[in-house]
Structure formats: C-alpha cells, structure tokens
Image (cartoon, rainbow, N blue to C red; front, side):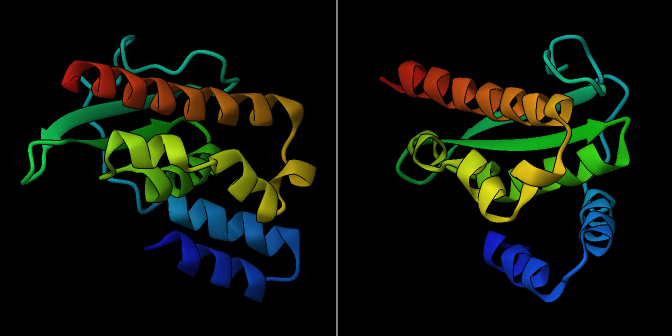
Amino acid sequence: MTIDEIRDNFALLDEWDDRYRYVIELGRTLAPMSDAEHSAANKVQGCTSQVWLSRTVDRDGSNEPVLTYIGDSDAHIVRGLIAILLTLYSGKKPQAILDTDAISIFDELGFREHLTPQRSNGLRAMVERIRNDAREALADAA
C-alpha cells in the first residue's frame, strides 16, 4: 500500500466513521511484533496508548542506511495510525524520512480535526521518534 492509495481511499469515504473503520483495517495489516520487541527500548514515550516501534537499519546497494520499522499498539485506531506512518517511513533512507512531513500529510487527510489532543500528541511522538532515528542513522553513516 502506498500513501497515494491511502489518500484515494480516504477520498472515497465521506463519513468519518467509515474513515475510522478504514484506519482500523489498516492497523490489522501490520506485521506482528514478537514479545521481545514489545520492550521498554521500543516503547514510544508521550503516547496515551501503549505504542512500540522497532527499527532495523540495513544498507542499500550504495551502502546508504535504510530504516525499516514494525510497530504495534494496544489501541486499534493507533495501530492504524502506525500503519500509515510505516507506509510513509519504513524502508526509506534517513534523508527521505527527514524530508517527509508526516504531520502535514495527516492534516491533509483531516486527522487534525478528528483526533483527540492526546492522540495528536502521541502521533507527534511517533513521528519524532522516527525522525530522531533518521538523524542518528545519518550521523552514524557520516
């Protein structure tokens, strides 16, 4: 799934109840996380729900770092938000991650008006965690 497909599917859904159901369905597509990956090191601070993001850093053919993520949450809607974030960020090079403004994409999809302040803060915490990982990967590659 691409972010353009998600945008197109959102455009087809007029009601926010339908959009929430779609986001929950996206969350069901997340790869499962092992018990070991549900660790304190992978837990995202600043989220009301429990959220874990686990990353691996590989190298592409030109030896540049590529960050790949799996994620999980104890809240269905948050799992869907994670699925959208991973569509944007997982499998990308650090600079591409830093160049992608996930919050503006979520705003474009209408989430600013439809997420509680706590969920919005949690979303920002997830984005910042991924962006920090990208900055760290860039620094390690230098």
